[in-house]
Length: 414
View (cartoon, rainbow, N blue to C red):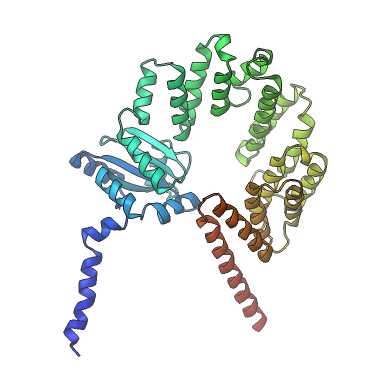
């Protein structure tokens, strides 16, 4: 046996693994220092692509595990960009960079010129094809966000452009600029243009919050929208806006502002106030530290859904989702299982199954959860959607079950 030849094999393989070709084929080549990336971008006259991510973000992991490593993605991005990863929950430079570049959602996929100025941005996970298309938009001076902002600042207020501009800002999670610029745009319109159906549709997309000038105008001028939009749609828009605006304010840091806003809402004497107030009461069991009394939450949720649950399916989804976040033991939150089963009995909408699956496994009803997972997977296949998410969740449940079984066996043997 030739021992020298055997020893040489690992060296050859190592050389292959480290070759530029193999690195390129593995996907995007990332740097982890933005300052260094900008220096390299200047030297090579390229744009910088940044993946702003956190350690806890599921969609970030999807991009990192399923999109960034693809050869076709690496082939495009390594040629066109200097790529950099920035972790925004590292308690250091990443946190500060997130603040500097106004990162409000994860992952944020951002493109900077060689001087560090924003060219384009979008948030959320995407397919490989969508991600490559996003890069092409960033490279195109006639299509990227920078060009749209420049055109807006130059005074373009044509309806088609304005729609494209505000949609680009929302996609980029530039919330502050979106709301400020839309308020300016709306204020400059004539009353006739404000009440146009197309303007209302854009307003629905931007979602100005209750008590803001734009929302208040629509609220106080409902009759002007009767012909273009219809009273029923306007009334629903106003009610839904209050419903979710106030519900989303129920957070430890916002409780004072929440109760103040709810008092202002009550003073308007809308007929749906009592229903909304009872819905909010379940979430009001949260204390100033964010702790939730689960038993009281389930008690209030039960009472509310028995009285008003059939009015809006989203009530059940919202209540069950939070309960799933708060439990993690066998039968700790079984009320949520019943809530979802009642909803699915009324309307077995495939989009509700994810929440049902979640509350099942959070209560350790693993067998039942896995049956629902089969249905979710079959629905995904029938609509040509990826099954990777549900497949990974099933794998996670099976691994978790094994750990619990092992722990139980160890405790029994003691």
